[in-house]
Image (cartoon, rainbow, N blue to C red; front, side):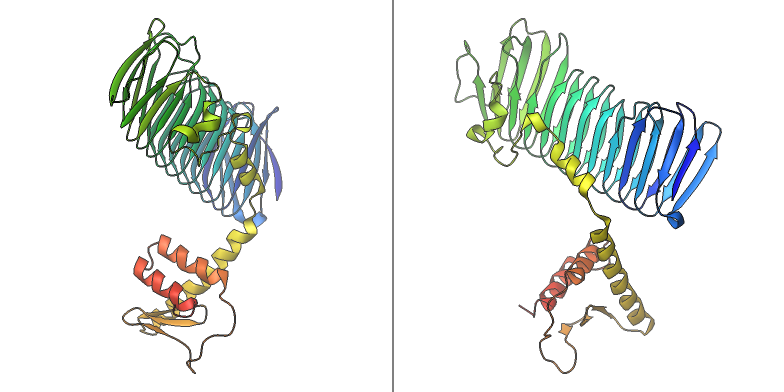
Length: 367
């Protein structure tokens, strides 16, 4: 389906649910263009607002000045050029955002990449890596489970990160910047920085001309220039402060940053390409395999059995896997769909971790 609707220059666009991948691009003009499968889109328009819901992949072109509110995205998402403000309740896949106004996210379960925001950025919970560059407003990240890379934030910063953090920062007079990390922190500042830097960590390294090293320190306060900006760094591992512009490219020299591989010239492009190149065919194959497994399970429940059939195996959760009769090893190769079906049922808590492990072992021949 391809449908074009006049909505005005600054509409409110609400997405209740997107069952697959989502692509949104802001464009000049006052029309909303919807592209999706005919049977999977629900559309409703009222004065000043539009509501859209889709069970599969969805592509939208919306006015640049639109305000966007999204409740749920099941797949990956790419959003470009939307300046009216974006609110996202939950997304399960990767999220790539470019050239927007403000952004607020409750939960992002996979990687998040942002480049270019005119307003504030707020994330309540991010459960994978986060990459952020060029934000004119404040950056507040209540919880990031994995690594954070941040460069070009011109407002205040308050972030809490489970693992490593790399921050390139140009502190503003009287600005406030707080970074709390479970592992290492690398802070890169310009040589002309005016900041009071308060640090806590297992090890503190200040690579700065004129400042004496203190190899034994686990807490330290350093005043750079007039000290007007306030920077607080708290790390479960090492803290390093430097004015070396290339520090992020060789970060493996002084911490656990070797796996981050930050190339600031192409910051976030990897995640963007992953979103744009994602194919729905693989997801549909997994969903189809899961549905087949669930139908087998429901059929056994209706017949009063306590087991489950996945692929060619009949499983009794009270005992051990029961191979088909005659009890000879299966000759056909293990299906990847069967594996994915088991893992998806585990993620949805339809089976326990032990049951999933035993099922996978059975599929591999009982090893």
